[in-house]
Structure formats: structure tokens, C-alpha cells
Image (cartoon, rainbow, N blue to C red; front, side, top):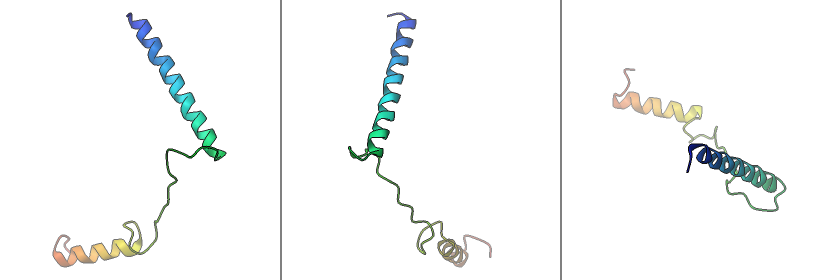
Amino acid sequence: MSVSRKIGIVFVTAIVGLGGLHLAERLTATSLVPSFVPTAEARVGRPLTPVSVAGVARRTVRRCAVGVYRC
């Protein structure tokens, strides 16, 4: 198989794959077919999440008490 034929096969495969992804996204937008990727559910801001202010403060106090930080 020549190099140009291999490149052509890769190109056609990429186009078919991207087209399939686009089609799957449009089908899930109309909710006819369930999605392969579940929806994200953000929990940022709740007291026990790692990104919340309370979570950061709690870890900082704990690390200062243990001696990880020089407080």
C-alpha cells in the first residue's frame, strides 16, 4: 500500500468519525437517543467540596496544625 493511499484512508476515517460525533450530538440534543457522555453536575461551592472557601480554609488550618505550612 502506498503512502498516499494510507493518508487517504486516515483522512476518510477522520471525516467519518467527526461526522459520526456531530450526528450523535445532534441526536442527543433532540433526546431521541441517550447520550454516551453523561451531563456534568457541578458541586462547586458546597461546604465540603475542595474548591469551596470553607474547604480551603479547613485544609489550611489542618495543614498549619500538622506542620506542613509555616503558619
